[in-house]
Length: 457
Ligand SMILES: *Cc1c(COP(=O)(O)O)cnc(C)c1O
Image 1 (cartoon, rainbow, N blue to C red):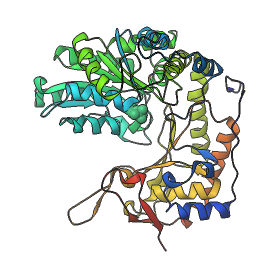
Image 2 (image 1 turned 180 degrees about the vertical axis):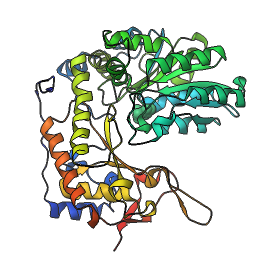
Image 3 (image 1 turned 120 degrees about the vertical axis):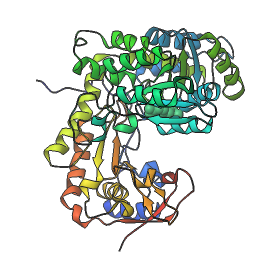
């Protein structure tokens, strides 16, 4: 097979500022060893997130100029609405400023005390919005998805037996919705199969429970279905997406992911009464229903992005570039979550740094080392992000200590990725020299954003 190349030419470039290792040692120290506190200008390769960091195409930039900024009935809104209707088949669409705004509106309308929401794995903002509405979110990830090195095609699947069991236990009347996250971001960007989506949807329908998709990475998920699920190899990604959405009553979406936009999102559904209530809330919190917190130019860029993201040349390159990075690391013996998912490579910091116990934050130590060694910024997903304390002050760690290296869409080339793997392998070779971390400051909520650290002596 020939090399899979970037399916674009570069028309506009953004210079990267180079730093020396000595400078970086000083910079990360000044940032209290927290990559969130580093100025982006001091980062060489920024893999903090794939959210809002995509490169827009020349067509999208042209769309920015074509954006209709009319307060009501903007032409760009109708492009936006049409693009979403074509993919989802859902008649009602409202724009929001980003994914979590859709969640806030949806769960304010459908949530409430004593109600349950089920998922393969809820993304953190989704769960937070469910809980903020007084409801409870329950994750029902299938067993395969819980083992980092176990190879399976659809590790994002919901556990269908657990779903039936949960409905039996809680009572269908107390369960408002089942929402499947595609791909499963918090579970390593792993895909969900069409079979799983169809069956989960049938179970919900039978029990009178709403079935929604958290569709942030719907195109990446559809491409995995095309490549891995029998019967889909000859279907277009658009047809696969249309089938996938046909099983759902509605969806939420962050256009900062699979729409190549720097900001934006939407909420779409089939039920007229619910959308009416959502629109009323949208007007209070986001804006008039034909712009919902976005400029006309953003709506235009999203409409074009949604069309581009389903191009198979793009998706082939996208999924391959993550796999390429993962394979190079696997060959060098670096422990990662396998197989690689759609948008990121996850380093297994527990396995990488067995001499650093979870309470000394191995993921945070690895993040610091990657920055010092090569100016790479990733994010810890482990005891810093999800750790809780017992009453006696002991840390309760989550099951995995990970470092996520999320790849922005269409931003970095193969040589950037080669460089990243070289740096990771360099750090891996001297992993025994890495030291644990101690927290010197932390906020009561979402501490990972602002926490300060010190390296252990
Ligand atoms: C990013 C994301 C969200 C939230 O979207 P924002 O645009 O960041 O508010 C929700 N769900 C998933 C799976 C995501 O990845």
